[in-house]
Image (spheres, rainbow, N blue to C red):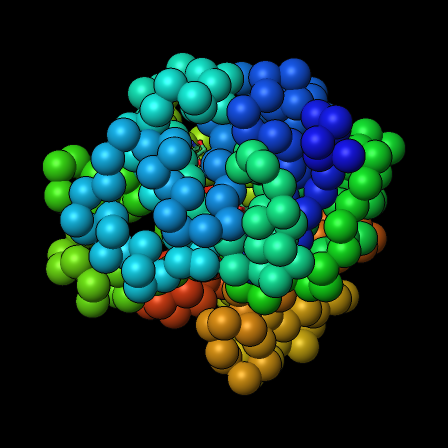
Amino acid sequence: MLSQNEIVAIPTETVYGLAANALNIGAVLKIFEAKNRPHFDPLIVHIGNKADIDRYVLYVPVTAQKLMDAFWPGPLTLVLPKKEIVPDLVTSGLPEVAIRMPNHPLTLELLRLLPFPLAAPSANPFGYISPTTAKHVEEQLGDKIPYILDGGPANIGVESTIVRFEDEKVIVLRLGGIPVEEIEKIVGKVEVQVNQNINPIAPGQLSSHYAPRKPFYVGDIADLLNEFKDKKIGLINFGKALYSNTSWQWNLSPEADLHDAAKNLFRILREADTSDVDVIIAGYVPDEGLGKAINDRLKRGNYKL
Ligand code: TXA
Ligand code: MG
């Protein structure tokens, strides 16, 4: 199907992607159409072997090579100057391409069988919560895509960390599955530029993204419970549950484990969004490791921004 320039939903360790031949403009156009995604939002190119990167980028800085060696296959996307073979549509006309080697056995096998790389954004309608199971994809895009490859629930649960380079300097554009602390262990201190609301390089940087459709508020739980005491509240909790006066509660991780919380985040946001509560509230999780990516998603989903 992919060889016939069709789109197929594929599993990755972060979230499900909506994939097509990255080197074929007609195939890539189908992705934008199915997602209702604006053409100014560039796509990530997925490859099955580290060495393939040389086919698509002009050069690999030493720091990028070190990060590839440390984290590929895995949830890290590198933004590097592209070769001509990568269509402008994939990069939205930018001179750089975002590229990663995902860590999922089925998808790695698929990528190694295909004679081309796969462009794949998260398989959700633009701006909505990313899918972490095949069922999530089916529910939202099922009628628009001919095939979903079911590889089970995503292991990491938040999207890849995106980094770009200024010479050897590493700049984080999106917080994600590889924590900044882990990156700094390999290349030293990095710059984090994830909050550009005007003309963002990565629309994952748009302030309202990953958003539930119901009113969603993130902050001090006690204050929020008080503010909405007349409403049917759905509470997204983390760690030991301390609150009892809500209609519904979900827990990102009763054991207060940030990996579990990342894995559960998007599923719980979807469940809360499709439940019959009037308003969803949540508190921030500890702002360290994967917690930074979780808090980033919570903040961008938050109504009040
Ligand atoms: O974990 C992930 O990265 C998932 C899985 C499917 O691989 N993909 C994903 O794709 O999250 P998407 O399209 O939802 O988010 C990709 C982000 C966008 O915010 C996009 O703007 C940014 O990557 N991006 C893509 N190409 C870029 C480029 N050339 N320069 C800067 N940012 C880029
Ligand atoms: Mg996305």
